[in-house]
Length: 304
Image 1 (tube, rainbow, N blue to C red):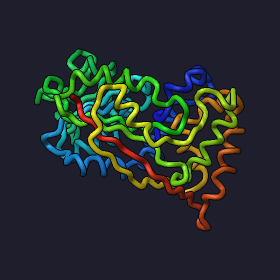
Image 2 (image 1 turned 60 degrees about the vertical axis):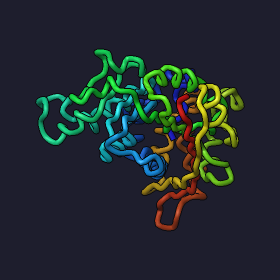
Image 3 (image 1 turned 30 degrees about the vertical axis):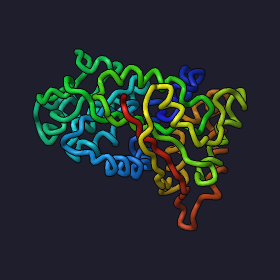
């Protein structure tokens, strides 16, 4: 899930001082991001991601998907111009030698530095000076064989806006026939979290505005691929249950997605926390943990 999921679609909340974006990014990295690990693994297994893979991760967030690909031997590049707080955490994971007090090539970060790049600008700048962590293997020169957008679409109206432009800027750097992977929410009847996400719509102003909750449609991902001029080449569904140690972790994790930022801006952070906790009560187990079954969908398309 990702604002990662729709951070760019709640721009009226971007200026709200009540949202601590650094804390949200840390909660995403430590609590929420791992919920999508089954999706990452399914895609990487199907596409046989390995040493021959040159991956570009768009909206890469705090970099867990990139780290998993790099552990398989892939050369990875990440770009996320809309979430600098998350990108900073991705640097800690993938480029540990760039942290203050760490010398070049020190410690266990050496291998990550030769296989990973993170971009402060758009993908078209991959060969420019604002790309850090460039390795000695020419990671910025060869075309990408895989482009991923793991931030799921299909739970808010308009949450695929801007994705076509993002892909258009990245695809010239991809090889002909390269795989492009898009991700989305599954049918609401198979996503227990859908009922919880309605809280964001109810509290936002206007409550039924252009970016309110809506059920995922069957062809959401195909429509995005078509607008980008891509040819669909397969799809799949993956179970990604959301599990939390307790109610507080569940609230923090879901808030970290960015899906509730508009509600916080329109009402009050404490009110959002309260109603979100109430919506989560049906999903609490006797031991205090919170568990919601979800299904996510991915589409594989090809660069013509």
